[in-house]
Length: 384
Length: 252
Image (cartoon, rainbow over all chains, first blue to last red; front, side):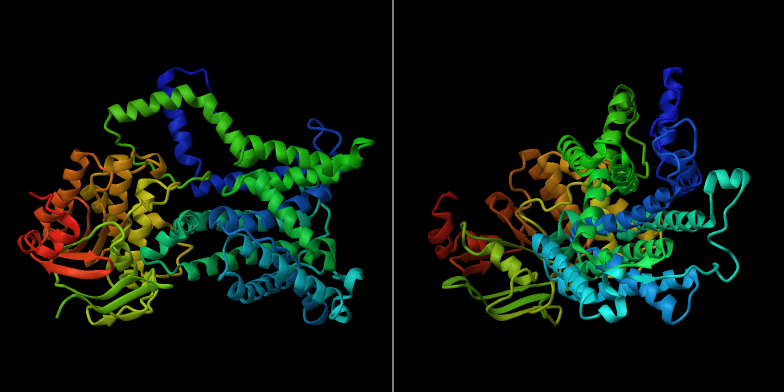
């Protein structure tokens, strides 16, 4: 996902042109779609099987699925914090609730992957609708803390009073049935498909990943994308121009919760297990760290954040000696990145490439100014 | 009947009376100004009318609707817009986006489910946005991030946002404060244009007496929360209570 793939040494005029072209296409939906599909198709191979990249990650195919799922979670979380400016420390409530709804539905009602995932998402939206009635009256730190409290309330509810239903720390086992009764998710491919994707489970999660990226891209390009940002920047002003801020926040909360719930459902299906830990507050904390580390308010940021997090947890953790300190190392990297680049790793990348381009962008700016500033470029922003 | 009417409007903060039985009436198409020394209650009056504050007692009626108890967004939706004293813009958004947000609120109402439609597909919103950027003369800075505008432009953007809500009555809280003489002149021309060409009723709060006496149809004078005089510029200029309380003869 590099920003600069244009030839830097071509003659000035045409290189300006290609940078302009790049700026125009890089936020189009088609481009984002191609990038995310390309990412899903190659990620597992590059990470866990390609001989050239690194041998420490060899064989970690399962981890790539986990990273995709948590990327979905972080993307959903980011919709609320990065886009709308609401910091929730209770997103485990969606993750865990969807996890249980998925498992319980599969055990007691009907077990088909797509159906139980949908049930999980709906359950997260339902819990979000109830929590919003309490939470959206609150602001800033009160919002964050009460969200945390609601999450913990659900955790305790699931771990003891409802232990008969949730099976507490032992968890509920979900058996995996064929998708739509036809496609075996555990089917292992051989040959080139096997080399790329290993199994259908990866493609199943990958398809949801692409769908979520496109869904969020569309939201960002819709009036909501603008209105969410307006609420983030100045809620009072947003209401004085005539916007029903409460309802827009409500929708942001449900969309974010629904996407977080999707991640919870997919994880349950993937691990074939729903456990009470997914409601625990530290889950909410993890997703905050991923989104902030990667870059708030961006599309790439949460994905990068989830990747780095699991790289440390899954790979560095397994290294001899160093492994014991993975959490410490992650914490130090987190602090260092956020200290130097408050916009996270993606913010760091964009500002570095911006600097590389500086002379050219300056020249381009001067040019458009001389030409009367006729560039009415659509700037929606992959970066805020 | 007047477009906007307040009746014995009173606002108390604890023991302090910020507004005391204020009766004002604004006719459609007028340009009225509110003057008064610092702390007279001018901002409190605007805030009470536009829903930011709830009056302790009294009524506010706009085009037959009782505004007391309505949310600010509801008041904006029925056609009462406002600009803020300190530029209350959306700093990280571009100039165009700042105006667009208000244009969406004007065209789509307070809430609409459309998060799966691209915003460039709403032509009427784009048209309104372009119109306003053109009127306010910010079209050449449309793609600039609002935070990086010079002060005067920020104040003009503030007016542009207020205008984009498509108001019939627009409250303007000291729109020229801190502006250079050239910017002030531009803003005064703009205010006249809003009244004459856009047909907007204007309620102006202003410190600059030259402007107030130059462009107002009528002037209200507030002093220590009470309305001490109302009338045409000529009547106010020679009003003894106003001179006593506020002008202190310095107009001569």
